[in-house]
Image (cartoon, rainbow, N blue to C red):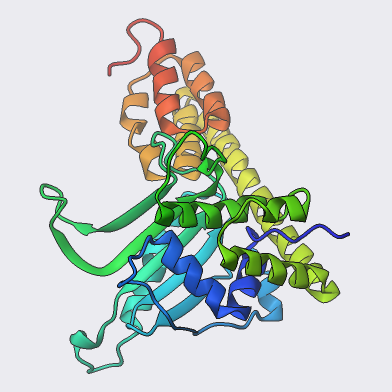
Length: 325
């Protein structure tokens, strides 16, 4: 028996939830914890097709764009790899989905809410235990004051979704959300019958049926393999770019001084791996004059999984008098 395709592959995700809209409706209702009055009952997909050239295009996200009967627009996507410009890209796409609703000269009151639902197969917020986050436009001083509900982004970090429900009591709504996220993590692993027995939601059972059918199709499996290879190549390219950037920074620095070169390499490494949060500690690192310590920081960037851990290591290992916190 063939192993089921992974629903964490964006190609499979799109195949699965565009072929059965009831699955998509239940997924949205569940992960957003919508109340009975808020739940959607109908949805229309604006980009159901997957073009052949998109499958092997490693920098294209195979997302699902949809609109429900109440006028809410959704952008649903699966992110397999981490890169520093994701926040800017996701913000741009949501804003574009919002602004593209109007033709020239049309009234602003025609604009409808845009809701992003992004599943990440990696951890961004390692300093926070939650696996779900909702970002909205709110006042900084009074966070209960929402400026508008027209733009929101829901992020779900799948590696944090662990089967520990015996220790944590979940409400019925929270359990439905947990089951869908767990389905993404485990549907393609091990014995299918055993995996099915874990879920109470009948819609997930339907998702297994469709995933089995999709996985049995030779052409679909072939295209899924091509897609997986393209994404793997993207990860390799990004990793190589980060390492090359660090090396180039060091090489360039040799001409202008080892210290400056290391700082350039560290800056590029922080930007590529952590984005803006990484660059926030750069002013403190620039105060370091110990070249050996800078070399140690450069090596740590490659191995640590959070900027908080890197900052802590720098503080703990600093030679006396070389770093002012």
